[in-house]
View 1 (cartoon, rainbow, N blue to C red):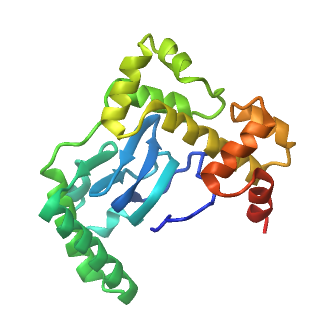
View 2: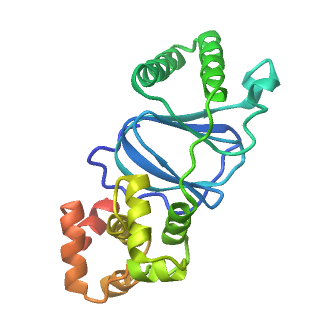
Length: 244
């Protein structure tokens, strides 16, 4: 996985896989929604997603790492995955993080060689380390804000409107969001607007003024400047690039 400089529109619609999915990052970050709960994955973080559980990727920023999945039946002992009843996020720091990165690198290399015996032992070692740690969770106000922001079918609001909807002061909401994610409310609102605009430019033939409005902009010229600032391309050029 390497999204550095990647201009593709972020995944918005949910999907599920008949396997246990995983994301492990060595740098950057990814925002994943799993069953209406948001998980912000950073460097040294691992997210495990149970089989047949719906998920969607809403944001990525220079994310480098490993993503994939495996069949639960791959293990001879089914008890290896009994603990995974819901999505699990864990952080590995310093030497442990370096070990995990090297383990995933070895798993990727051995997969290319078809060395299933090593992969089975490597995954068993991974799961042993995972079970020894508690799962990470975003604070409810942060998760609630991100869930609202990236939910399909909802209009994009201002920061003050989200705070009012959640019966919180805007200062408190901004503070807790920034403390938990490292970024302020405005960053996430801009990200949601940009993602929605990218998706609509890629998947629809709507006029630019309608796409701007759907992304929360009522001034088409300002929308064009905003889009170019964040992507280096005008909305029209992005649409052409997405359609080859």
